[in-house]
Length: 176
Image (cartoon, rainbow, N blue to C red; front, side, top):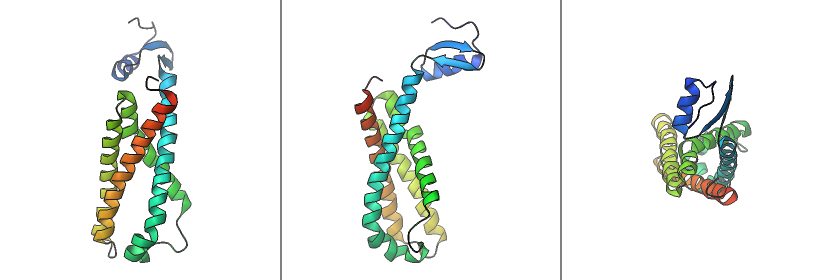
């Protein structure tokens, strides 16, 4: 492998760790082979995972809001809905985490099992942290909500990660 003449140690290390071939380095601007395709893959994966997560979660929330959350923790809920800003921020950042820990690695390996397992594990640990903290600190947080919400977060994140992976692979092909 021939290295460009103006290549720093950081570029060499990144190239080695990422498996990308360094094509050119001009001052602070470095180009790797396959970098644009990888960026497109991650953008498509992020959007696909986000849509899948939002669709699946909206079904749960519409179904379980009156059946589970209102009866169990109703006095904690806002009258008339929720704050849209924090909800959007949560979705954007949670999907980014899902890309980093589940969908991205699955796209690199080409294995759907990676998306499903690591997505489910991320969902379990994130929802478990939230629910057990609430259960430990809030008077009206119930055991029922804690258990069902952890199960839901595990299923939701695993399913959305898998869907994001499959949609990305279907749209861009397996070797992109």
